[in-house]
Image (cartoon, rainbow, N blue to C red; front, side):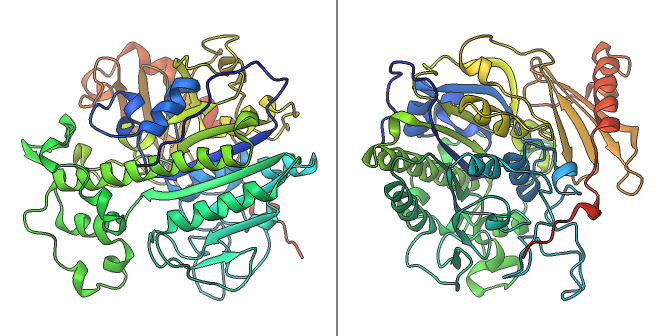
Length: 484
């Protein structure tokens, strides 16, 4: 396992000039060592937290790949920067006869059907930053249309071997070996190319998203299924959650559900949730090794001491909790993500145990830390005062979540509250309300909105949520920007 030591806090510099956002896919916060997991091996992330700042309450604003990634680069809620909450484009694509593709505009079309306002990359680009995107993209506008000078991105999703890439929109190619190794080579090459000019690197790691059977053998066998700390909410009517069809998808992804390849039709003998946990843990440790190599590459290029590094994930994974799988839900397994910041000369290992931070806060925080103005269209807020130790908690300490399951919610350090909304009218309803007290009920087993309809927290949280829903705009398709 690669270990790259993050530097100890040094003398405070005026402002770190470079930015790396390291965004992995489908990693929930509970499966990182510095978040209290004693079984998982994540030495590099733990080291990053020891000299950085770990936010205990990191939250995705939309627990699904494309909208979550769009919130990171835009500083806006998915409804505002995408026009909808799922993985497809807001535009109708007559060539396919369906509502867009779910990855990005058809190759090599240009334009920005999503992200109508200036992105983080565009703001930095305007002040002389070199900007690059490497690894999984899954945003419904091409990188060069939303502020990236260069990019190396997959043309298919969820494939850790034999992946198809395009470099700066050029012909597709398939590099040998694992995607993570190739992408890190590209990261190293980019870091060597930039010299004195400031840079922003958006580095995306596909694991621990499926297919979990396509990870290196050393990580497949790294954990004993018998040792897995299965969460208490993974038992349904006393039985361990399990679904053979779901398991096959976790192991083989589109090789099974698209192509039904022969080797994907059967599970290993006796395979159950413990085995799935072990593979997920192995994939997470593989991700951690990439973080170690990332820091080693920053050191080799001479950028470790003047580069802000953020590690987070687009969303988590239900992984059998409450009998549910994958993401999109408001349970903490799906919506809580690691949020670990390393700001040279600023962070010193002090954790942020109370402050809520979400994906829409990333853009304004990065702009604040590097001395840039925050555009008016940004809906998030900077948590730089917390990172700098000026305060432990900002006012209005809550975050909002929305999802394609037709629900909206608000989270505070103690409560998660959710309501349904109608996709057609976009109005919200009190039917099926959810309230969990995560302080008293950390595995969210008891819905207090049903058990205690007059619970004192409901009125306050409902008022917050209703006001946010009414005041947060949806993207209008007329905002679509054509580019040449």
